[in-house]
Length: 205
Image 1 (tube, rainbow, N blue to C red):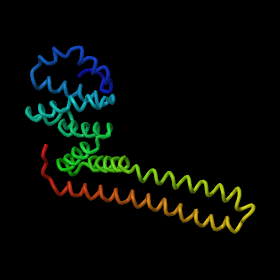
Image 2 (image 1 turned 30 degrees about the vertical axis):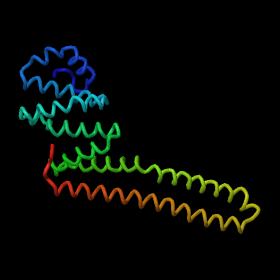
Image 3 (image 1 turned 90 degrees about the horizontal axis):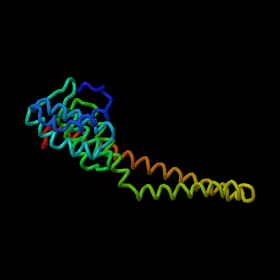
Image 4 (image 1 turned 180 degrees about the vertical axis):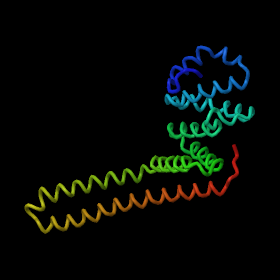
């Protein structure tokens, strides 16, 4: 606990070298050291390890009625970082559930709705492979039409070039309009989910 605050790897090395001695400490101090060790694994990006460590630690802080270490809300910090870990390893459903519970626990925290929205949008991007493929194909078609218009039609068949240009503009507007509507729909859907979480204060953790 005396190691420099951001020396996360040093904290991890110290803990792992002295694990047996730490486990022999009385429960309040042992739990606090476990907390700093677990948080250090999150800070270095070892997300799967953090998830594994946080599950029994969450049970310990509940059982021991631990609320704060300094100005850090222990339970919410662990829960938020666990959700962030699930997000980073693309387990979006698990992350969404935890972010949703955090919104219900602390409706005034502005970070939780932002994280919920980010997670929902990333999930939809992952699930929208068909839309992305169609967008890429249409983009290549538009580029090909531009090249054909500039290199062939405009110099030799200007009237056909004008017609192709109009068709190209219609395709481009349709493409970007569809993508904009798609993104707006999922953003508004996620916002509605956040509002629902704020109305439903009951948690199941």
